[in-house]
Image 1 (cartoon, helix red, strand yellow):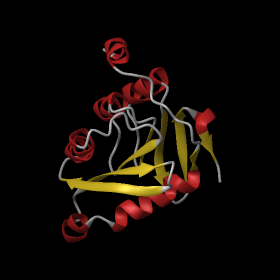
Image 2 (cartoon, one colour):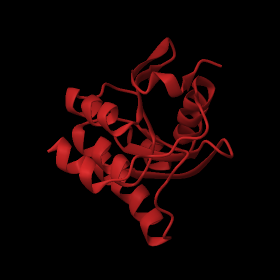
Image 3 (tube, helix red, strand yellow):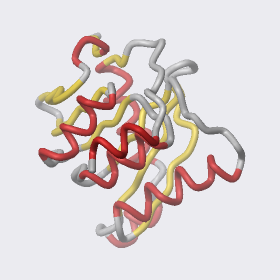
Image 4 (tube, helix red, strand yellow):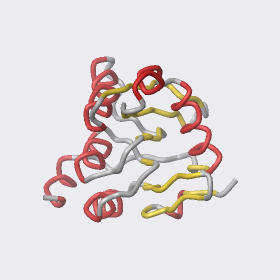
Length: 153
């Protein structure tokens, strides 16, 4: 349940504001670092963007969006870098409950997707104190949770 998830996780820390330019730049850089997508046209990606340095730290690809997120966060677990405060998780597919849950448990305070979040993902983000941005496209983006931490720049 969402309630049990919140008991087992620490509230993510976001000391830097999430800027629209970082979300767009993060997706552009993530896309430029997807060699498997270039070859197949059907591979998902997850990227970890530092809001402190304003740089992409890592990108992982997989046929499943959940697997790409697992690879990305798993590498940070192995490096003992959790919680991932002041980071943005970027995903190339829609955000379901499970991806929001993984981000929350990893201490990631901001999550952005090129597609839609599920209603449960929005609820996890809102109750967990995360910023959630969806439908990041050339025409705009939607902020579903944590708008007070989002800055249009």
